[in-house]
Length: 353
Image 1 (cartoon, rainbow, N blue to C red):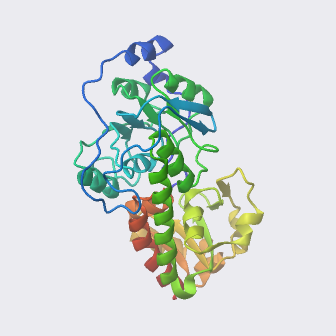
Image 2 (cartoon, rainbow, N blue to C red; image 1 turned 30 degrees about the vertical axis):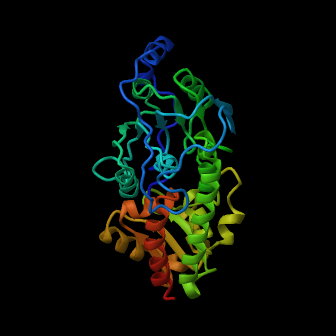
Image 3 (cartoon, helix red, strand yellow; image 1 turned 45 degrees about the horizontal axis):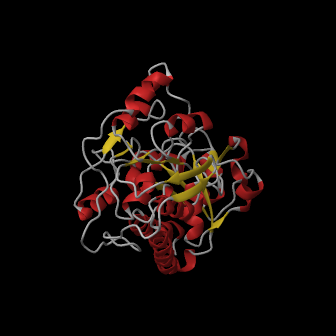
């Protein structure tokens, strides 16, 4: 998976701002044409909160996040999701269908969404959200036209300036600690509080963690083995412990290779590595993305990459299905079953466990 493929560009979009704050201000005044939050009436297949979960907290609620604190006066009815590929999952998992979400360009299906999110929308019996193009940054115009009463940006790279622009449209709940470095548990809990469903959020986290523990036992001898989640398509390098890719494997019971821990700082999600030192990237398994089987084979036989110990030993894992990769890279309770179904057998097979 390319390093920045799940992360929209972070700069302020002058195109969508239309050159002035007046453009945003005029769009904020648009009248909403329909309601957007829908609670299903049936029992859900999602671990944790059921499809019929409703607000249990007393409004107003105040949510603290890295860019400040946000007070939500009443149960939101029109939620817009901004940021990476899993933001909308945290909302839908609690029975709320957003009216808008970022179009998923890398790893998305033909709807610009994911199969697990679409399944949840269908389960809830609601309307498919509008997908917004964020390839040039946050799409302020589309967001304002949706007349949201809450904007969720828990997995985004929104700057302070972008956050301030968004607050002119509706209350905004940003990332818990920093851009792109939050655990799915923290993002789920923050989202749940903003929706007035704190207990449902806690239950969802607990039951999803239980599922991970149960499935991790299926790894057998592969459990505890060291890993490097790298990128070899653009330049040689690896992801650090704050990135979603290593986070997911660590939750499964794998161990981040010492060479990664020792050579990346706490605020780095990625580090490039000199190709002439590829043989120093010691781990039991080396994992990365490939576009297809042909490219995966090219990586396995590349003269430089073959000096990486795990690849040399035949323990290189190159996944080629983008949506499979996305399920683990951008973890969420909705995506977790798919992620476990894909990664558990793939890791076992690659390690011969």
